[in-house]
Length: 247
Length: 247
DNA sequence: CCTACTTTGTGCGTACGTTCACAAAAGCCT
DNA sequence: AGGCTTTTGTGAACGTACGCACAAAGTAGG
Image (tube, rainbow over all chains, first blue to last red; front, side, top):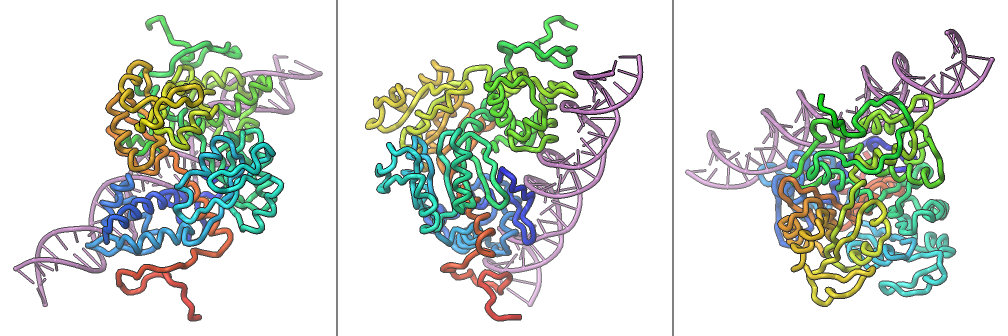
């Protein structure tokens, strides 16, 4: 979900649906695994199983890219890897800057999964002079003041925000001003950005809350009561307190 | 997205739409901020702006919980905080176990955002004896063999998997066997789980790939060519190689 | 009490996403 | 060469989600 002001219901023109784009990386990963095992071709049924989706959905998704399968046989693994990579833009190099080198930024800097698919950590940045200069994952942490220069020289277009929430919007504005047009935000805040800038959000707390919702439905019957802040006053409409009297 | 075999298009019965559930934590966060600032009431317009959504959508979302607003006035902040918390199940305590204490697990253990909303890190687990016994965030890392006991004694129902990908499915199976019914998976793998277990997935690499896709559309015109694995052979159907000759 | 204003809650049209089901295409075997 | 099997690609039906726009319900002021 590209939050912010970048409302784009579905890609215009040639248009690959957003939902499909979100699944392509999934297919790509499954295909890479097959490729490493030396599997030459794969059917939509098998690939769908590996990616955990419905096979009709997989075929329709792939059909947006072109007609890359062979009826009666399936898809050529290597060829499909290439086509998806190309569509996602992974045939080129994407320098990434991580801003905010706390616990999470530190972990991401060391995270191998980044480098795998054309993403390269080009810079680690922090506003705190106590942190800048430290070496992490073989890389010196630089000060925020160097941002503009780094973006310019290394052609960075993707920024990852791992600052505390209160600093996120300000950092975001600076990134945008420096010319960054895609942001992955780990701070628990809604970022507002100008048109043309994409923001994606990763929020651990939200994921847990969604799990808790379903967990509650499973274990107990329904929402559990606690200390209730007094209703602003209004005749009862719905069971905010359990009905004790039988009808 | 509850991956795995737990297909549940929309909640049955009283049913709050899944898309709405995913937004409730967002509203809750915005409301908490208002609450801290001592704001007593808020209109759908204001709250929607703070959460970064359309106000009609916000009102519709809230209407699934009940009729908690006052026309001409807005919503009582405290009261709405309580109602959303209750619906999400945050009025109770959710012990969480983190499995796999590498870079990411380490960062999550220290992450404050966890504790905030009724989530409590109850245990840190790892299979590597070189790691177990270490103290992280004031908590001893315990061995996987203690899993069953911990789940039983601490009533843990949510597990967070931060192991390397190859270990994830096996760890997942063990969690499920031990009685855990909700899993937050950070490992880049599709987990398969029995019915009744919810899995949510957080995948940095996928988020970056989605950003790269849009970034490519913005900067260059369209996908960029690279070393092309030979087509399995089939008459040309679509521009996998750029047309050089003018029409 | 009556009028003017504000803001919620929702009916409705539209767009998007998912799944079924099947014709068309390709390979394989006799 | 012809028929049988496999598997893709997609038309069509269904369900979900979004956002406009407005009636209903409330507040405020005279």
